[in-house]
Image (cartoon, rainbow, N blue to C red):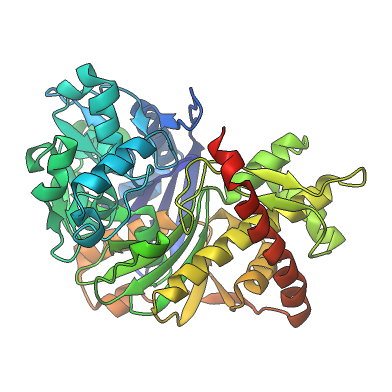
Length: 484
């Protein structure tokens, strides 16, 4: 058996697969998020470790005894800074933190290679500008930094004592030469860092260390190998078999992602499309990212007094009315693709006395779908081929949302076994591959199809008209966002 652990933004998730790759157990533990100032988003790394231990403990002890290897995945870009004694210096600055636009501008001006060697625009969510922000705003903390780790790799350090990361996650720091798949001193230098501050780089299936003896005893395991794993999206892609050129996934987690596997490094920063390494050798990917997706539903459900998000969504599904007059701009944490605007705000427009929880739920489902459609259009503009799209993440549990997304994007969506577990499943599959080897296409074959949602002509017509209004609202409000 093989264990995948995903250090997400809202929770830590664990998935166990058997020798055939079939999921047999899973568990999760929620995580808190701190937003102490506007645009800020932070977490305490100690919470990742506590929740990891709790999530593992939820698995049956008989299953834990049979684990042969562990793979890790996690939220990308989080800046976890350690001193010379490996102590955490401050809360980790997360991927959806928008405080460092000024630092992005400085890095872009100083080093144009971020766009070429790094393959991406310098955006506030990425790790590099966060470290420049620390240097400029918390110099005493910055002076003590010995090591910078990503969230899953801090957990790895606690598990194994090793400082290591994988290329798919490391690529999101902006410090990697993406084509060459190695750290770049030229990109680290403008942030006041060098490769001495970085963990060792591995491909996603490679062994990075073994479980510490005392932890193995506490978890009821042997000292099993810990595999490099992947950033959450690359691991999620491995989980649903999106590993070859033209295969894609649509992820509906805290954020919203369209991930497209490629067989070469194909940067397209002009439209804020991300170009990163995949979690498997000699593979890369393009990615559109919106910062708030399923988290918009969490927010709206709480706003309307619905404690259960599933029940909140069911209100819209029961009414079954697409293209209503209410509009929602899903920019609760700013936005990346295609706008690269950390100052964008969430907006409800067109509400009236008859707006209720059902219509609000519908507007949120559609608003997120429109954000995903904009990202998909940006991917298409890169001239990359998209052959199929699988859906993963917690939002994959709603086929009604799939119907809306399919109509907004104009493409069929494929739902597969284990889709809701996403990155944790991919981490477990990477662990299996790291131990057993084999043919990549066999080891990462696509799970069984449980449903396919095709765009309906009537839905497409309704949403196309509303999509134009969605885009117009954003354009008309850009200057207002800047004033906040």
